[in-house]
Length: 365
Ligand SMILES: [Zn+2]
Image (cartoon, rainbow, N blue to C red; front, side):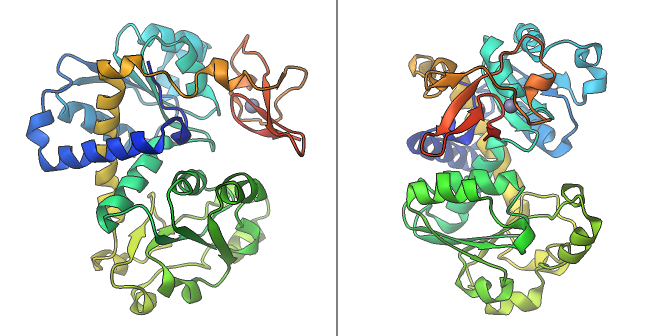
């Protein structure tokens, strides 16, 4: 049995296959309309994320299945102090697949260890959101007809944006990808992403603050929102918040087949006037996400998959050198609330002696 906790749980071949299935569903929705008949999907949303939840619900309904669940922690047994592990075990008795959103990082991994049915991570704090990355990859492939030999620009908050880090990790596995990383100094891509993902894969990249100068060379532009709550100093936020706003005049010098993406919601970083430009792909991107979620549900509940061993069973996750004599310093780690969950660290970077929490992947240096 497989779960999807991190985008790298899936091989490139599996992601390609999921995209083939998603494309087939788009073309022939009726031939999938009964595929999940009598199956149930449970949405366990410990924090609200209406768009993601609706996308999963629509995906399951369009496959002929049913949906149950809750949309915030205050209406669930978590409000009474039940552990993630217990909740997952109980709800797995009511549903064939669980979709979990949780503010604590590592919560879906904990759920997947006690659940007898597949668990899909629909976002855990600032950590992972693999179905967003699947939606992003499918958008690129569908719009550009390829996932190689592309110049991909990321613009805005590259420091905290988890969708950016995941998409960079996923795209780094394809050939001929060049990244252009556009951000203010304060929001540059973290050094561990450069070292562990970009340098490791050999992908080429440049960093710049010059948005207009970089725009003409891009095949893909991935815009992100700069979030106020990330800044401890309001003055810094005020200085950077409106630095990068895409408007129609800037697009005069961009490629005719540029694909403009955004994980949404946007605030003002893409002018509404851009929406009418055929290069604006962000609303189609949300729709592609539904088809990828349909393909993923089919993949995880397809009985033929049951014999495929998971590439990331936890035994493997913790089979590397492990230490238990430290405490995770990440305030958003699931170890801060889940009772009896052991503190576990794996050696992430042997050269520099960097240990990462097994649950939230926070670096305890
Ligand atoms: Zn942790």
